[in-house]
View 1: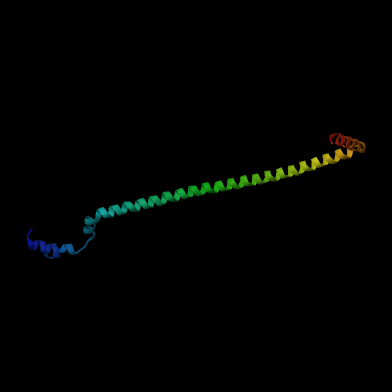
View 2: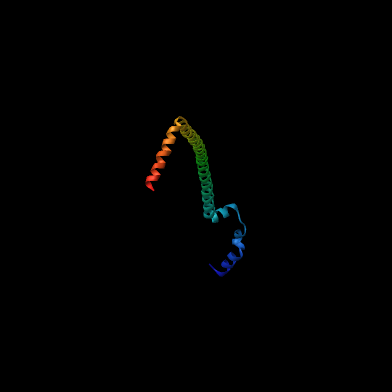
Length: 126
């Protein structure tokens, strides 16, 4: 290649004037690998977005289900705690009733004998 042809190619004149004009075919012929990479990247991004959306929907569904189960468990625990509290109160009332009934059914003479016995024991122990 002569120096005139090199200069013509650099200046894009003469037989190299077509280099000044960009056509769609010329752009495709030169940059098709870049277009291909961009296309693959767009497909990858769309696929990633779709998969991420599916995963988010799945996890959201699992979290909602878990939250419902947790609330049900909390309600059951609350009801059981209330039931236990009720039974404890009922048991306390039963114990108090038993004590009062026992004291009412014990004759007063038993008390005096108990106190007499206890006072004698105190005399002998001291």
